[in-house]
Length: 384
Image 1 (cartoon, rainbow, N blue to C red):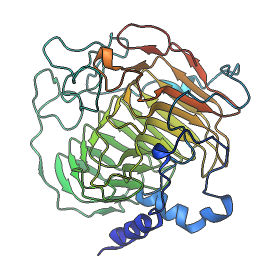
Image 2 (image 1 turned 90 degrees about the horizontal axis):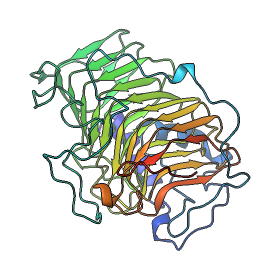
Image 3 (image 1 turned 180 degrees about the horizontal axis):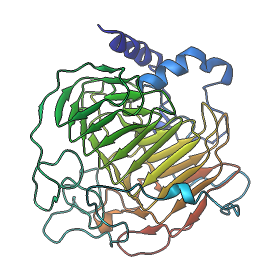
């Protein structure tokens, strides 16, 4: 067993008592997580590094959507602006302004939801043919890539390393700045695919598929990518208990993150999760969670404060609630949630209410700026 596998084994054993919030009858949010400040210490650092820590405790399970603890109105302070601009993309991607409707040539999931993973595309949003490594699929304007086996080091220590066109099996530990992974595929089993722990790493993952192969055996859920200092562009990631963790700084854009799953039944699946961060950009992605818990995006200030958040022009489908904005041991502040589309069963999504219980759950003293968030099938505004 290598050191990474050993640390994961510790992480998994620490999570055996993970709270099964989805089995409880509407637990009341208390503003405190079982993760106490004094108890975070070394274990939290290790769990964050491996992707084994989750923040799904004390979240609503059933019934009425929780309301903010202080105010139910969006913050009047101006949200971040200049830094929220989408990253320039060398490869063409779908326009964020395109109307998200089902393709006329593809078949949607079974009517009424039921957690059937979609195989169709949604006009204007990332899909199989414009994310991941270019395979020459119909409609993909990128040059087809033929992968070759990766034989380089799994711990990257040389600044400026470029991994291009490679088929990678196993966990990559990023210990250098300005590393680029592009036009590649990474496959793992019960371990994180890419780990970066430096806020200033400037790691870029572009046009790459990341596949957990459905072999995550953890209780809490292993995030395929984590935890800070990265930018993801046109990434297709799927097949682990969680998909992406941003704890520190992170940007994900024009990507398809979907089908969180593992071999156990106790995981609280999140597509994107953060428990402490100082810069988050989630821009024009397709985020899909076929489970009745937990989320497409979970922002919950468990380990530290969360601030400077922009969630703009995404398509969200499924989860318990699709979007969570939560205080816990710390506060979440300074956010903007704008121009997002939510899918529901009547428009080809998993569940009639968007998420199984609804589109969003708020429990925080400071609310994000919330505007122009709509149902994708009708364009009807969704109130905060």
